Amino acid sequence: MRVLVVTAVDAERDAVVRGATALGSMPSGGAGESAEPVAPAEPVELAVPGFVLRRPAPGPEPLVIDALAAGVGPAAAAAGAATALAAAALSGSPYGLVVSAGIGGGFTTPGRSAAVGSVVVSDAIVAADLGAETPEGFVPVTDLGFGTVEHRPPAALVRAVAEAAGAQRGDVLTVSTVTGTAERAAALVAARPAALAEAMEGFGVAEAAAAHGVPVLEIRAVSNPVGPRDRAAWRIGDALEALSGASAALRAALRAAPPETWGSSSDTCGSSPACGTRETRSTSES
Ligand SMILES: O=C(O)c1cccc(C(=O)CC[C@H]2O[C@@H](n3cnc4c(=O)[nH]cnc43)[C@H](O)[C@@H]2O)c1
Image 1 (cartoon, rainbow, N blue to C red):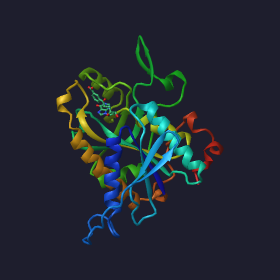
Image 2 (cartoon, rainbow, N blue to C red):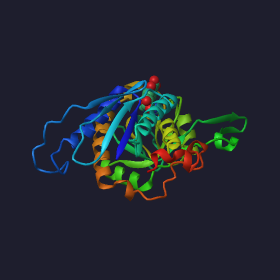
Image 3 (cartoon, rainbow, N blue to C red):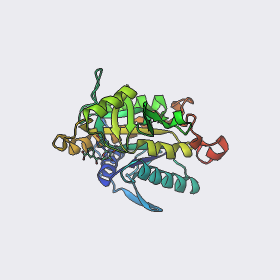
Image 4 (cartoon, rainbow, N blue to C red):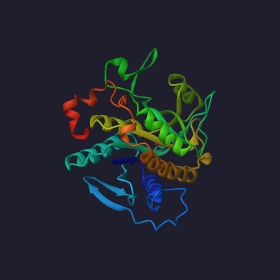
Protein backbone atom coordinates (compact mmCIF):
# COMPACT_ATOMS: atom_id res chain seq x y z
CA MET A 1 0.00 0.00 0.00
CA ARG A 2 1.08 3.58 -0.62
CA VAL A 3 0.48 6.18 2.08
CA LEU A 4 0.66 9.96 1.64
CA VAL A 5 1.48 11.95 4.78
CA VAL A 6 0.82 15.69 4.45
CA THR A 7 2.41 18.13 6.90
CA ALA A 8 2.43 21.93 6.92
CA VAL A 9 6.15 22.68 7.26
CA ASP A 10 9.48 21.00 6.53
CA ALA A 11 10.28 20.39 10.22
CA GLU A 12 7.10 18.31 10.58
CA ARG A 13 7.77 16.42 7.35
CA ASP A 14 11.32 15.63 8.49
CA ALA A 15 10.02 14.40 11.86
CA VAL A 16 7.63 12.08 10.01
CA VAL A 17 10.43 10.79 7.75
CA ARG A 18 12.72 10.21 10.77
CA GLY A 19 10.07 8.19 12.57
CA ALA A 20 8.90 6.21 9.56
CA THR A 21 12.52 5.46 8.61
CA ALA A 22 13.50 4.24 12.09
CA LEU A 23 11.22 1.22 11.94
CA GLY A 24 11.87 0.70 8.24
CA SER A 25 15.56 0.21 9.06
CA MET A 26 14.92 -2.75 11.36
CA PRO A 27 16.14 -5.96 9.70
CA SER A 28 12.96 -8.03 9.83
CA GLY A 29 10.32 -7.76 12.51
CA GLY A 30 10.60 -4.11 13.48
CA ALA A 31 10.91 -2.45 16.86
CA GLY A 32 11.40 -4.71 19.86
CA GLU A 33 13.56 -7.33 18.15
CA SER A 34 17.04 -7.89 19.46
CA ALA A 35 18.88 -8.01 16.09
CA GLU A 36 21.19 -5.09 15.33
CA PRO A 37 19.42 -2.41 13.30
CA VAL A 38 21.01 -1.69 9.95
CA ALA A 39 22.01 1.88 9.15
CA PRO A 40 18.93 3.70 7.85
CA ALA A 41 19.08 4.51 4.15
CA GLU A 42 18.62 8.11 3.05
CA PRO A 43 15.08 9.17 2.16
CA VAL A 44 14.38 9.53 -1.54
CA GLU A 45 13.09 12.82 -3.01
CA LEU A 46 10.37 12.74 -5.67
CA ALA A 47 9.00 15.70 -7.60
CA VAL A 48 5.31 16.26 -8.22
CA PRO A 49 4.19 19.49 -9.92
CA GLY A 50 4.81 22.32 -7.45
CA PHE A 51 5.93 20.08 -4.57
CA VAL A 52 8.64 17.68 -3.42
CA LEU A 53 7.81 14.40 -1.69
CA ARG A 54 10.21 12.59 0.63
CA ARG A 55 10.04 8.83 0.85
CA PRO A 56 11.60 7.22 3.95
CA ALA A 57 13.73 4.17 3.24
CA PRO A 58 11.30 1.28 2.74
CA GLY A 59 11.13 -1.54 5.27
CA PRO A 60 10.55 -5.23 4.65
CA GLU A 61 6.80 -4.78 4.30
CA PRO A 62 5.06 -3.80 1.02
CA LEU A 63 4.38 -0.32 2.37
CA VAL A 64 5.49 2.96 0.80
CA ILE A 65 5.14 6.18 2.80
CA ASP A 66 5.56 9.54 1.07
CA ALA A 67 5.77 12.76 3.11
CA LEU A 68 4.87 16.17 1.72
CA ALA A 69 5.18 19.62 3.35
CA ALA A 70 2.33 21.49 1.65
CA GLY A 71 2.15 24.74 3.62
CA VAL A 72 0.17 26.19 6.50
CA GLY A 73 -3.63 26.29 6.45
CA PRO A 74 -6.42 24.22 4.90
CA ALA A 75 -6.13 25.66 1.39
CA ALA A 76 -2.40 24.95 1.03
CA ALA A 77 -2.93 21.50 2.54
CA ALA A 78 -5.74 20.69 0.11
CA ALA A 79 -3.73 21.92 -2.88
CA GLY A 80 -0.69 19.84 -1.93
CA ALA A 81 -2.65 16.72 -1.09
CA ALA A 82 -4.80 16.90 -4.24
CA THR A 83 -1.75 17.40 -6.46
CA ALA A 84 0.08 14.40 -4.99
CA LEU A 85 -3.05 12.24 -5.11
CA ALA A 86 -3.72 13.15 -8.75
CA ALA A 87 -0.10 12.55 -9.78
CA ALA A 88 -0.11 9.13 -8.10
CA ALA A 89 -3.46 8.12 -9.61
CA LEU A 90 -2.37 9.19 -13.09
CA SER A 91 0.88 7.24 -12.74
CA GLY A 92 -1.15 4.11 -12.05
CA SER A 93 0.01 3.76 -8.41
CA PRO A 94 -2.70 5.50 -6.34
CA TYR A 95 -2.41 6.09 -2.62
CA GLY A 96 -4.50 3.90 -0.32
CA LEU A 97 -4.42 6.23 2.67
CA VAL A 98 -3.80 9.93 3.29
CA VAL A 99 -2.63 11.18 6.69
CA SER A 100 -2.63 14.81 7.84
CA ALA A 101 0.14 15.04 10.43
CA GLY A 102 1.86 17.75 12.44
CA ILE A 103 1.90 19.71 15.64
CA GLY A 104 -1.27 21.19 17.09
CA GLY A 105 -2.98 22.72 20.06
CA GLY A 106 -4.43 20.49 22.79
CA PHE A 107 -7.81 21.16 24.40
CA THR A 108 -8.37 20.98 28.12
CA THR A 109 -11.95 19.87 28.73
CA PRO A 110 -13.76 18.98 31.97
CA GLY A 111 -13.53 15.25 31.15
CA ARG A 112 -10.09 14.92 29.60
CA SER A 113 -7.32 16.90 28.01
CA ALA A 114 -4.51 16.57 25.48
CA ALA A 115 -1.32 17.53 27.28
CA VAL A 116 1.67 19.15 25.61
CA GLY A 117 3.89 16.38 24.20
CA SER A 118 1.01 13.91 23.85
CA VAL A 119 -0.48 12.65 20.59
CA VAL A 120 -4.08 12.74 19.35
CA VAL A 121 -5.47 10.53 16.57
CA SER A 122 -8.65 11.76 14.89
CA ASP A 123 -12.00 10.07 15.40
CA ALA A 124 -13.30 12.91 13.21
CA ILE A 125 -11.64 15.68 11.21
CA VAL A 126 -13.84 18.73 11.65
CA ALA A 127 -14.00 22.11 9.90
CA ALA A 128 -14.73 24.13 13.03
CA ASP A 129 -15.10 27.57 11.49
CA LEU A 130 -16.52 26.82 8.03
CA GLY A 131 -19.86 28.57 7.96
CA ALA A 132 -21.59 31.88 8.51
CA GLU A 133 -21.88 34.19 11.47
CA THR A 134 -25.50 35.18 12.13
CA PRO A 135 -27.24 37.21 14.84
CA GLU A 136 -28.13 33.84 16.39
CA GLY A 137 -24.54 32.66 16.31
CA PHE A 138 -22.32 30.51 14.08
CA VAL A 139 -24.04 28.39 11.44
CA PRO A 140 -22.02 25.56 9.79
CA VAL A 141 -22.03 25.34 5.97
CA THR A 142 -24.05 22.13 6.14
CA ASP A 143 -26.94 24.09 7.70
CA LEU A 144 -26.64 26.51 4.78
CA GLY A 145 -27.09 23.63 2.38
CA PHE A 146 -23.46 23.18 1.29
CA GLY A 147 -20.82 20.46 1.47
CA THR A 148 -19.66 18.86 4.66
CA VAL A 149 -17.88 19.87 7.86
CA GLU A 150 -16.62 16.47 8.95
CA HIS A 151 -14.72 13.46 7.66
CA ARG A 152 -14.47 10.25 9.66
CA PRO A 153 -11.46 7.96 9.27
CA PRO A 154 -11.98 4.17 9.42
CA ALA A 155 -12.61 3.41 13.10
CA ALA A 156 -10.46 0.26 13.15
CA LEU A 157 -7.51 2.18 11.71
CA VAL A 158 -7.93 4.95 14.28
CA ARG A 159 -7.91 2.38 17.09
CA ALA A 160 -4.84 0.58 15.70
CA VAL A 161 -2.79 3.76 15.22
CA ALA A 162 -3.82 5.27 18.56
CA GLU A 163 -2.93 2.06 20.39
CA ALA A 164 0.44 1.76 18.65
CA ALA A 165 1.24 5.42 19.32
CA GLY A 166 -0.02 5.48 22.91
CA ALA A 167 -2.28 8.30 21.75
CA GLN A 168 -5.72 9.51 22.73
CA ARG A 169 -8.55 9.41 20.23
CA GLY A 170 -10.74 12.45 19.75
CA ASP A 171 -12.03 14.99 17.28
CA VAL A 172 -9.37 17.16 15.67
CA LEU A 173 -10.65 20.60 14.68
CA THR A 174 -9.37 22.51 11.65
CA VAL A 175 -9.38 26.30 12.05
CA SER A 176 -8.15 29.09 9.80
CA THR A 177 -7.40 31.31 12.80
CA VAL A 178 -5.42 29.91 15.72
CA THR A 179 -7.50 30.11 18.91
CA GLY A 180 -6.14 32.77 21.27
CA THR A 181 -8.65 33.16 24.09
CA ALA A 182 -10.23 30.93 26.73
CA GLU A 183 -13.66 32.07 25.53
CA ARG A 184 -13.06 30.90 21.97
CA ALA A 185 -11.61 27.60 23.19
CA ALA A 186 -14.70 27.04 25.34
CA ALA A 187 -17.01 27.87 22.43
CA LEU A 188 -15.23 25.34 20.20
CA VAL A 189 -15.56 22.60 22.82
CA ALA A 190 -19.20 23.51 23.44
CA ALA A 191 -19.89 23.08 19.73
CA ARG A 192 -17.83 19.90 19.53
CA PRO A 193 -17.53 18.21 22.94
CA ALA A 194 -15.29 15.42 21.62
CA ALA A 195 -12.66 17.94 20.47
CA LEU A 196 -9.16 17.09 21.73
CA ALA A 197 -6.87 18.97 19.36
CA GLU A 198 -6.84 21.94 17.02
CA ALA A 199 -4.71 22.57 13.93
CA MET A 200 -5.00 24.26 10.55
CA GLU A 201 -4.69 21.62 7.83
CA GLY A 202 -6.63 18.41 8.52
CA PHE A 203 -9.91 19.31 6.85
CA GLY A 204 -8.15 20.49 3.68
CA VAL A 205 -6.27 17.21 3.43
CA ALA A 206 -9.49 15.31 4.13
CA GLU A 207 -11.38 17.12 1.36
CA ALA A 208 -8.67 16.19 -1.13
CA ALA A 209 -8.74 12.57 0.06
CA ALA A 210 -12.52 12.46 -0.19
CA ALA A 211 -12.40 13.81 -3.75
CA HIS A 212 -10.16 10.85 -4.61
CA GLY A 213 -12.16 8.31 -2.58
CA VAL A 214 -9.18 7.58 -0.34
CA PRO A 215 -9.48 7.07 3.46
CA VAL A 216 -7.98 9.81 5.63
CA LEU A 217 -6.55 10.08 9.14
CA GLU A 218 -5.16 12.94 11.20
CA ILE A 219 -2.35 12.69 13.77
CA ARG A 220 -1.46 15.70 15.94
CA ALA A 221 1.39 15.99 18.42
CA VAL A 222 0.48 18.66 20.94
CA SER A 223 2.85 21.65 21.04
CA ASN A 224 0.71 24.08 23.04
CA PRO A 225 -2.55 24.30 24.96
CA VAL A 226 -5.51 25.75 23.05
CA GLY A 227 -6.46 29.00 24.75
CA PRO A 228 -4.93 32.32 25.74
CA ARG A 229 -1.93 33.14 23.58
CA ASP A 230 1.33 32.26 25.34
CA ARG A 231 4.28 31.73 23.00
CA ALA A 232 6.53 30.93 25.98
CA ALA A 233 4.43 27.83 26.71
CA TRP A 234 5.08 26.28 23.29
CA ARG A 235 7.09 23.06 23.20
CA ILE A 236 7.69 22.58 19.49
CA GLY A 237 10.77 20.35 19.97
CA ASP A 238 8.87 18.00 22.26
CA ALA A 239 5.95 17.90 19.85
CA LEU A 240 8.18 17.11 16.86
CA GLU A 241 9.77 14.30 18.88
CA ALA A 242 6.30 12.95 19.66
CA LEU A 243 5.37 13.27 15.98
CA SER A 244 8.39 11.16 15.06
CA GLY A 245 7.34 8.48 17.52
CA ALA A 246 3.78 8.55 16.20
CA SER A 247 5.09 8.12 12.64
CA ALA A 248 7.00 4.98 13.65
CA ALA A 249 3.82 3.78 15.33
CA LEU A 250 1.82 4.53 12.17
CA ARG A 251 4.12 2.31 10.17
CA ALA A 252 3.89 -0.47 12.77
CA ALA A 253 0.09 -0.17 12.93
CA LEU A 254 -0.24 -0.40 9.15
CA ARG A 255 1.81 -3.60 9.21
CA ALA A 256 -0.42 -5.05 11.94
CA ALA A 257 -3.70 -3.67 10.57
CA PRO A 258 -3.63 -3.61 6.74
CA PRO A 259 -6.53 -2.04 4.79
CA GLU A 260 -8.53 -5.27 4.57
CA THR A 261 -8.99 -5.11 8.36
CA TRP A 262 -10.34 -1.55 8.40
CA GLY A 263 -13.88 -2.68 7.58
CA SER A 264 -16.19 -1.38 4.92
CA SER A 265 -17.96 1.14 7.09
CA SER A 266 -15.54 4.02 6.57
CA ASP A 267 -17.61 7.11 5.97
CA THR A 268 -14.66 9.16 4.84
CA CYS A 269 -16.83 10.66 2.18
CA GLY A 270 -20.00 11.02 4.25
CA SER A 271 -22.55 12.89 2.18
CA SER A 272 -19.97 15.25 0.72
CA PRO A 273 -20.59 16.19 -2.90
CA ALA A 274 -16.78 16.42 -3.08
CA CYS A 275 -16.77 12.62 -3.04
CA GLY A 276 -18.65 12.47 -6.32
CA THR A 277 -20.12 9.25 -7.61
CA ARG A 278 -18.46 5.84 -7.43
CA GLU A 279 -17.56 6.26 -11.10
CA THR A 280 -15.73 9.54 -10.54
CA ARG A 281 -13.83 7.99 -7.62
CA SER A 282 -12.88 4.74 -9.27
CA THR A 283 -9.21 5.52 -10.04
CA SER A 284 -8.13 4.99 -6.44
CA GLU A 285 -10.67 2.50 -5.17
CA SER A 286 -9.16 -0.69 -6.46
O1 LIG B 1 1.18 33.24 17.17
C1 LIG B 1 0.48 32.49 17.84
O2 LIG B 1 -0.06 32.83 18.89
C2 LIG B 1 0.27 31.10 17.36
C3 LIG B 1 -0.33 30.18 18.22
C4 LIG B 1 -0.49 28.85 17.80
C5 LIG B 1 -0.05 28.46 16.53
C6 LIG B 1 0.55 29.40 15.71
C7 LIG B 1 1.03 29.03 14.40
O3 LIG B 1 1.31 29.85 13.57
C8 LIG B 1 1.22 27.58 14.15
C9 LIG B 1 0.59 27.16 12.90
C10 LIG B 1 0.96 25.74 12.55
O4 LIG B 1 1.06 24.87 13.68
C11 LIG B 1 -0.13 24.13 13.86
N1 LIG B 1 -0.62 24.51 15.19
C12 LIG B 1 0.12 24.39 16.30
N2 LIG B 1 -0.59 24.77 17.37
C13 LIG B 1 -1.80 25.17 16.93
C14 LIG B 1 -2.95 25.67 17.60
O5 LIG B 1 -3.02 25.81 18.85
N3 LIG B 1 -4.01 25.99 16.83
C15 LIG B 1 -3.98 25.82 15.48
N4 LIG B 1 -2.90 25.34 14.83
C16 LIG B 1 -1.81 25.01 15.54
C17 LIG B 1 -1.02 24.46 12.68
O6 LIG B 1 -1.57 23.29 12.11
C18 LIG B 1 -0.10 25.17 11.69
O7 LIG B 1 0.49 24.26 10.81
C19 LIG B 1 0.71 30.73 16.11
